[in-house]
Image 1 (cartoon, one colour):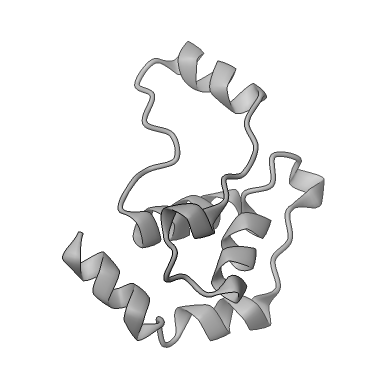
Image 2 (spheres, helix red, strand yellow; image 1 turned 90 degrees about the vertical axis):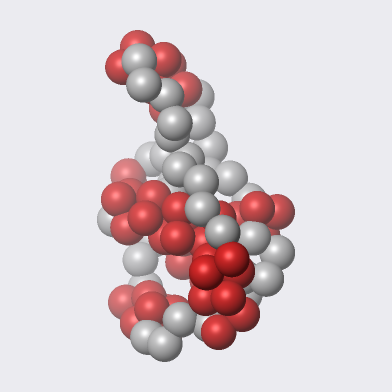
Amino acid sequence: MFSLGLVGYKMLTGMPLFAETNVLELLRRHANWRAPNLKKSCPVASEEVCQVIEGCLAHDPGKRQLDSDKVSAWASPIDPMIAAVVADS
């Protein structure tokens, strides 16, 4: 589920959440990490899309949420406005 959130975030923003190349830096960042506000990075994303991605990215695996109906509504078809933003990246 976390991986789906990472892929979704990169698709919408064009940027990876974790760009660290050093494993210790990555572990340190992840230990204190909170899911970012996707709306700030991708203002054209709908609230529903933001909720799906942010729900997948919760730090605590027990708090990660994945509503398959929301995911399928988001993934097919992809919102044309978001697809245009991604294409321009």
